[in-house]
Length: 471
Ligand code: PFF
Image (cartoon, rainbow, N blue to C red):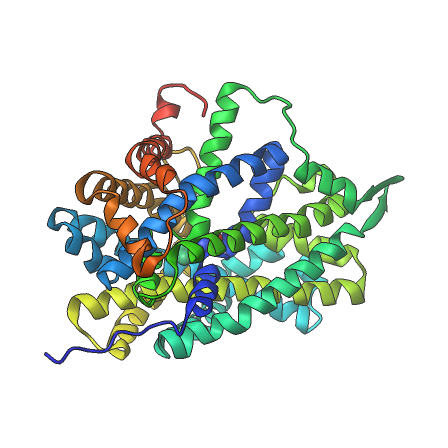
């Protein structure tokens, strides 16, 4: 068979923006700020940053280097390093396959709210039960999901340089500008409610000042685990994406430098998402408002905040905010789809077009089931970690809590003990580049990361709950 030419990013900037585009997504916007507010503010931030510089750095370096070394996507990359680790490749490909449908369903919700604020329906969106009414309706969530999916699939279909890189080069700088402007605006807010005046700066204090109130050893451990789970999802590691993107990086590019910049980008946006959201929520809804996360935060609490800003300002901020979330979600979903499409290309030697069509059909069928999970397929079960779940939550649990730690543990064992960390070092040092934090990397990949990951996995399957340990 004739060898197909592999796509490539045009240079480091294109790669960094695409990888940062993958990393910066809904996780940064709707989970990070809430976790920080709930877990001792600055205390969580410090733990998160330390983890990002050690654990996050290790996983990101490993995946990007595996991708560039093997020039393969997740499904086939692992078996090139060791035949015994083929299963990890299969898992790493199943993860994005599972995530894409529900990420598109949520992307559809974002488009719905974006459109609502554009057409001046923002006020109605704050009514009690509006969000519930929308997701439980039969057709609207499917139609919005389809719009989001078509945008995603179009970029992936156009290829690495002409689609993914181009999209990221436009959306990521726009996102940064919006994040900075909205953050500054959020800090200037002031609101009086029932005789109490609250300001954005007070909200900022809750977010950044460390609070040790009620922090026991158990609580500290649970903050550590929350931070680690978040870091995973946020950096898009253990789901094949960074391996696929790494495989498109040219040999002369400096990988170590790129890893640092992607990390700074992702952590920076997560931090500023908190500066945008926490002061605004605190000013208008008080401390109770900070209790919500995920859909409740984005589609219920925040529209209320925008409404409280007044009809004109609220509408403008609402449009800008949901545009930003849409940009973040799109560049992430593009990367998720690319991981699957690239795997099909490499495994079955299909053309990009054929892989895109097949993945689109699979994704759409599952995504429609996900959307209908709040309607005709509505049911509720309790997950091993105690959370109540519908179809979307089950897919999220399977991918994030079970498969991702397994893939990451396999990666650590493969690199730490089977191939040896030197494999990664050689890749990073190609072309005379330096591998900063090499000693740290070796210890992390061999010992600390797999142990932490194993504990995370035990926690996810509910072992600690079973043992009556509250972590
Ligand atoms: N990292 C993205 C976020 O924080 O929302 C989500 C994500 C991207 C998940 C890519 C999975 C993935 F493959």
